[in-house]
Image 1 (cartoon, rainbow, N blue to C red):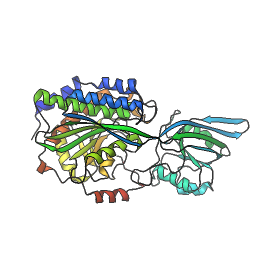
Image 2: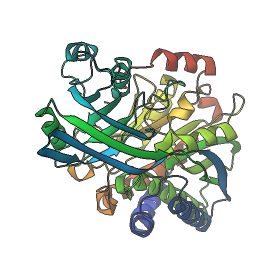
Image 3: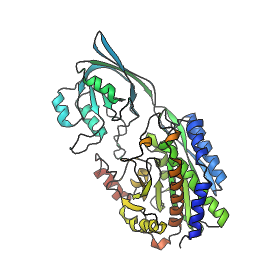
Image 4: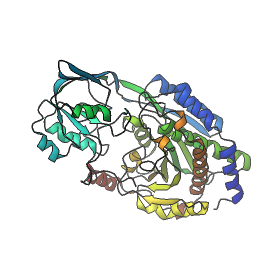
Amino acid sequence: MTVSADVDRWIFGEAWTGSQIQDHVTTLCDTIGPRWSGTQAEWQTIDYIRSVMARCGLDRVEVEEFDFVSWSWSRANAWVLADQADRFDLDILPFIRCPSFRVDAQIVDVGFGTQREIDKAGPLNGRVAIMAMAHEPFSEPIPPAYRLRQVAAAGASAAIVIDPKTGGRREYHSAHDSRDPDFDHPPLPCVAATREDAARLRRTPAARIHIDVETAAPRVQSANVHGVLEGELWPEEDLVLGGHHDTVFGTPGGNDNSSGTIAVLETARVLAQLRKTLGTRPGRSIHFVTYAAEEQGFQGASQFVTSHYAAEHRPRLALNLDELSAGPMKGIVLGFEHLRPLVQQQLDTMGDGLACHVMAQLDNSSDHFPYLRRGMDAAHLWRWRFRSRHAEADFHHEPADTADKLNVRELKEYVAQMSRLMLRLSQVEPGAWPPLGVSTDDAAARVEAERGSVVRVF
């Protein structure tokens, strides 16, 4: 089956002139604002998304609740005492899932936290280590979480991790590896500090630091929002388009991830309206999902995969939308190789020079990973997220990721292209698809082999 030029023109026109993006931006970023999963603000978001999906005219919309152990903090203070006359305060943020702790100890600089630098620093027993988040130039890259594990093994009581951004900025960070079931918390108490504060700390190496952090780990309720546009020819076969609706503390998440949430809603609206206006239906069912708790270990996506998919029933492809205002769309990035010819063929029919690539590792950075680690075909969009991104989109996990960081004009193009691609994929004959994913055992073995590696993102 082919998508006609008239349908393509209609999709682009509706995505552009019928856009409701600005209304969604205002509601999510300004009216609701920060929406850490499990909070009242997230439940406002869930209700809003449900109502938008219902208005789209999807065949069914469900709020799928689950509970999980969340995390929050109520106090994070730090000050340095070089001598009785020289005290200064630090602006810190606890790492996500950092425990409560108090420490009064000497500071030691461990550079980038490589084993060579730790050994050079001498005994760390009971001391607070200062470590750069960035990778050591020219050396084999080691994820920060694993460098912190080395710092903990050397006896440090806590770590101050230097945010690489300038201008007094610091953001929420995690120190775990979702590929490692035994590595879901920071290996020692960790806080993030600004680059400028860290530079001052390094100028006072004999100083003592006092840190007082209070956190909690309550069990909370959250939910994914799930809407379905049923297929006409193969309704039992699924395509999934999803993106997380939660944010970290204190940020309205213009780019991360109001952009992806809105693209899911707008693609659902365009394709439902296409069916109503022109009678053009998807061949297989398209599932539109906004996931909860991505910022807390992909809890929502993991729940969705567990609830809906097993070895005998898998999606044809799950496409994840995250940080879509970081740069223009360039194509699709798959987790597994076997879908590459089929997806590239569909992109070629769109005539926009979009490319299909395959990750060197199973990308564990967002909500496509719960699919990949079970051997299910999943992908994310190729865009300038990690380098050469828009300067105004270089805000991540911090309060300045506001509504103005969402690029409305580019997001309209994303919606149009996602609508065209999902419609095309839905109409590919079942016999033209390769087998579904890879075995769960093969996927698990690959995840195990890739533990501790830095995922190549471009």
